[in-house]
Amino acid sequence: MALLGVVAVLGCGDGDHEAEKNLSRGLVSFQYFLTAGLGFCAQSGWVYRAEIRSPEDGTLTVAGSVLESGVTGRDDCLPEVSFGTCWVARSIPGRVLTARESEAVAAAFKDVKIKTEDESDCSFADPCLVRRFTWTNAVAQQEVSVGASNGSCAPRLSDADAQSLTGLVASLLLGTT
Image (cartoon, rainbow, N blue to C red; front, side, top):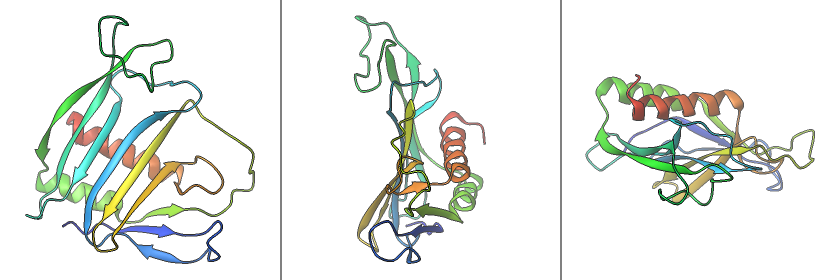
């Protein structure tokens, strides 16, 4: 299992805004996916879903899918994100990461922080799409699911961490590392 440096900063109703849990030990998988907010303002070629797994042999693997424009009535449109535009997911076969790619993954996760402290503006906000990130951790026996700035109390990543991890999965799936 990979040891990636992910730290969760807990708060927002749990009584301890400073508590931290290291989620890096025993990482089983990391998942990235897009979901609709108010509409779905994605582009063809964007990563729709991605998963980085750490099998028992210590390697890291990646698999996923990218969005492509489809034709309503002909293609199997994704109902959860097709609002006037037919989106289809094109699968990208899984593969084992190279040593260089595994180092890039470890570096990207080294200082990621998951925050749940209250935002100053607690009003309702819903972007046109939401990026979701999920870690499954065997040692802590927990799954942590976060968005990129989606609500005042929801666990979320900073914009910089969300952009970094989005870029990482895109480069691994689309071969731009």
